[in-house]
Amino acid sequence: MKRRPLFPALVPRRLRRGAGPAARADGTGLPPASPWRIVVLVLLLALGAALGTGLYESARRIFGGPQVSASELAQLRAEHQRLIADNERLQGSLAAAESRLEIERAAKDQLAADLRAAQKEMGDMRNDLAFFDQLIPMDPRQAQVNIRSAELERQGELLRYRVLLMRGGRPSGEFSGRLQFSASGVRAGAATTIDLHPFSVPTDALAGDGAPVAARPAADPLAVRFRQYQRAEGSLAVPAGFVVRSVTVRVVEGGVVRSQSTVNLPA
Image (cartoon, rainbow, N blue to C red):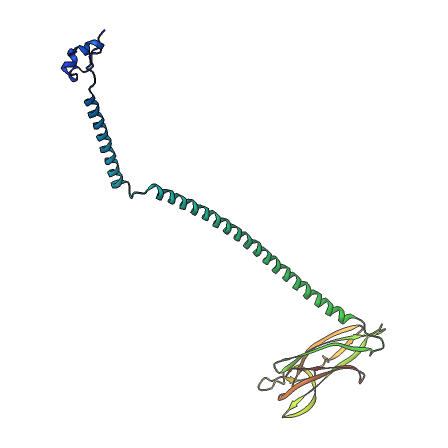
């Protein structure tokens, strides 16, 4: 059964008629292929491929950006990989440096906290040592009353004093006495020694310029009365024009000096 072509108008008339004995011999109705036709067909295919390649390259040059050779592309890929490796290495170094910095910062904070705690503990121990040192009983062979410490400092035209008195041994009764202060210094260019008295401001006896004056109130502020120890503090009036160099503190009982101590003042 002979097959009919789908589009008879496109089939050459000679082919539709089956011209030539060769066409009838193989029963296909097609003429044998000519070598020239094959050559022409190959040339047409090659020309089409060349035109297609040229159009592709032209379009790529126009729309695809700059041309990069295979060697340049390989070099760029290697450079890209190297940059990635350098970036990872630098990130690792940065992380390690930040970790060390955090450790050093924590160690510094801990050392600062330890230093503050040690300084506070040292200050407390120093205060305790000074307090207990003052409370240590003295040798019973020494004077019955002893000046354990005496401090004096200038406060304007006054002298501020702090005195700690203690009794040695095991006293059976109370000690009753009085403090005396005598100052050595310079007045009008001459060395002299004077007695200092507690500072007070009487309501009816103020100097015109408000200068401190010495007065003796009804209750003697220099009187001391204790069994084991006593702290005494107050202010002493210094006469105008007198420069104090040193002060001698005395503990007097019934007109007898029981103990004394001299304190030098800075110039």
